[in-house]
Length: 84
Image (cartoon, rainbow, N blue to C red; front, side, top):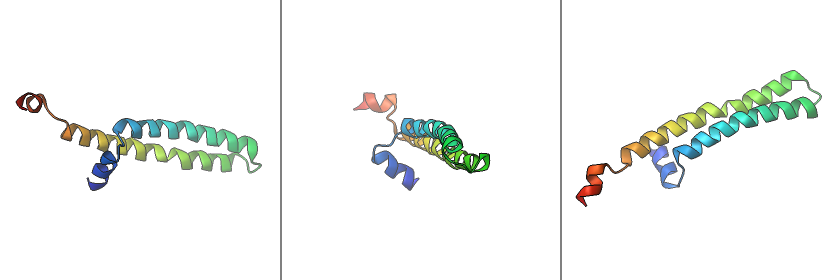
């Protein structure tokens, strides 16, 4: 939880992590297409690039879930807002 707290304190939110996950999916497709066009190595190399970048998405989604859980756990409740 230390890493998640530090990331939250640095200003990273769950929305940022989710956006990075979706971006990595798009970047995976883009890297596959660019590799197919620009390199003469063929489909195997393009697949490797696409898979390499695509593996980032689950990490970012997991980080987003951890940050969302942390944000919910530290958010003030209605009772806290009315007691002050």
